[in-house]
Length: 160
Image (cartoon, rainbow, N blue to C red; front, side, top):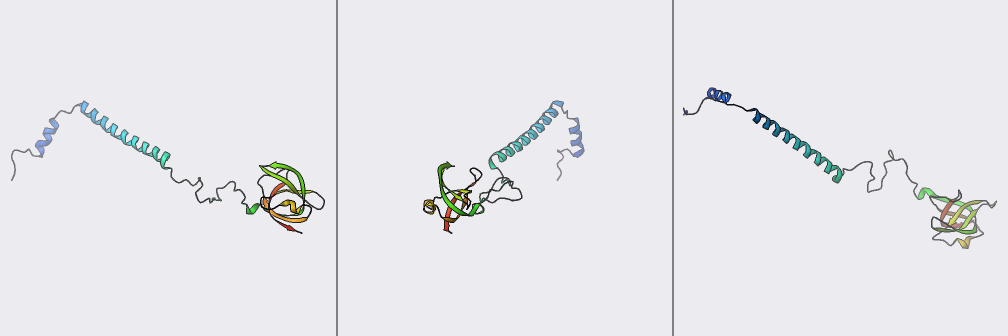
């Protein structure tokens, strides 16, 4: 069943060619395509900025929550308390009390020639009971020194 009222393809192409196309409509089409492209571009940029500012992807340069250090990228790894443990032998003597890093230091460890070895303090032992005795002290060296000598937080004292 063919409908004789409908034009065939040749007639349609002639009709379309004969229709006037204005330059104004072509400009509008070009502008609308440009606006769509600009809108898509700006949307992508805004999404990228929001992602960077608020989502913050995991960065390998930031420390992780489990406190591990990637040794290949570390410039400085502070010593652990275990690596700062010291065992020193000598005689404990009183010294003029002084405050270093908020701690009262009133004892000093000297060798047989009375040369100073280290400053001593303790939060768990009474160093006054060992004054004048030859001892071996085991403790943790503070991160800072005083007069180029270690400050030792004494954990244990052994009489020698």
